[in-house]
Length: 238
Image 1 (cartoon, one colour):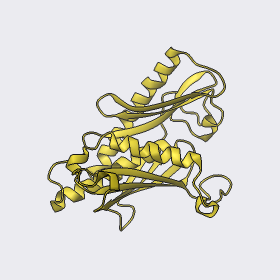
Image 2 (cartoon, helix red, strand yellow):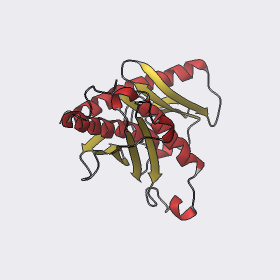
Image 3 (cartoon, one colour):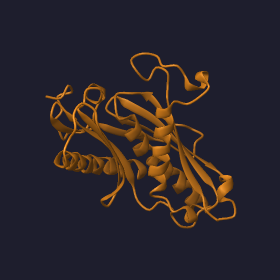
Image 4 (tube, one colour):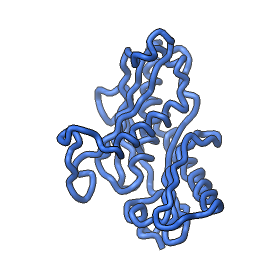
């Protein structure tokens, strides 16, 4: 039995509230159960120096966890003077995941930054960040197309992410914190609508696993991301 009482293939409830902040070109508050992440998209008419003159844009991500997002207060990384390795790894993952579904030529010479700020953590913060960042990106691009700044849609597909793991010998979908902290293996899958894999991170924590276990986790991820794609679609069509 999972601590939450969920079935092995049962997701936590997903909610996406769009237009959550006033000033960002695209924003949403995404919730996977008790995990909540504020995702905002900022459009800037500038690009990194190495892209100048190429007629291409750029999409990047930043990630942070607020001090009281967890059961004890964490020190702000700004107060430490540097980002942790975990933060850097996650925000690179967010950027790679979003760039996998954006045609940079069609975006034009502009940059869109996706800021993902965790306000409450209960497992799966990076996967919720990616899934919510796509919604914020979609809304920002919709605005650029409505204003005529972009003629062709640069977003080629939806991208979503979900965590899976082996908990007490059973592959399970959408880990919350009690499961994530005690899993024999945990994995994060970033999937593109239509069946493609953008990224897979799978680690044996307590015990090694075999190919069949990995494939079972992948199948769970496909089921979970199908639900996320549906939630993204509903959120961006409101």
